[in-house]
Image (cartoon, rainbow, N blue to C red; front, side, top):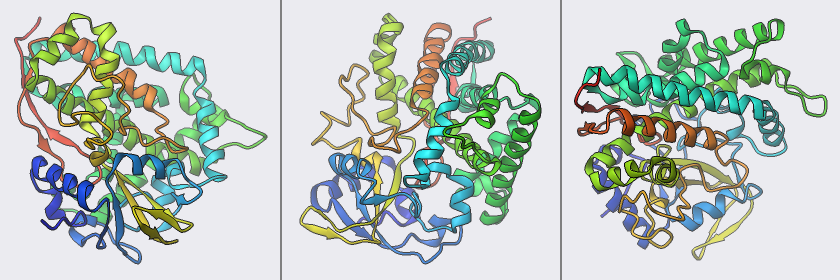
Length: 413
């Protein structure tokens, strides 16, 4: 069996066949060389395309994640090589190394004061309750539209201060950035044109809002960002814009798709759902970790080798790209017991759903956990008999997404 992770054909395979391919790589070729990604998978023009090493084992992913000195993020973190301006505009500090990464992440982190976090978390809990209550009388429809999509959208909008009138266009732009390989999202447009339009929409909105908050501060995260200061340094409007693009994608798509995958798993494993329902406050925290492991919404990130490194009897040379496939690591039976079993009691659950640790560990992990606990707490309380059908998957190699998924329950009034 020949495995080519650089081809669109691979990512069009059924999940079971993809998992078999990753299992084969873990056994026989844990740092296999892969060719440059094919044009139809890249969707956008590549700069000097080269191949890469596929890192598929759990322990290797953790090792690379925690060694930024030898494995750099500054040349890009996705499969392909794109223009530096595109990296700068869309990926903020996740495509940087220290010291710049340290400075920008520190400034953004400083804006998440305990008061801001408490405000955001209370907003999440209230929004989850209202979203499920709004859906309850309908008796079903598209789960993504009715429930999964709404909480992350509302969370980002509330925490930043996005006006109601702008919310749908912001999430549409974020969807486009991670979906340029899927024809349904392009609507006949050229991928680069669609991507450029989406980035411009998000960047312009954030720049204008940052300028407005400098003159008219409010009780929101955008105000905290423009006021954040460490050792006399502040974030520029361009840096805030790039971070907002990252937040719009990472904070929206990942939680949405985890919610959808987890709901499908709970439908297929009603015993697991009933177990959580018996004591949701006590059992949802562990269940949420399994939701994230099972879904693994971000399937990979890349690093570039800076110094020679020995791995599995081979030498990785400076300039080589290594791509950490979290989806494979989260199914690695050498690190995770019975990894193909969906088990909400799994404890400990040291999954790779928020990264493998190190300086690039997901900054929003705590808020994502709050969202998932809140929305599933409300689903199990308000519409406990919900059933969902087969998900309609997003086509692509980066986000393990769900475009649509039918659902039904007995309407509540």
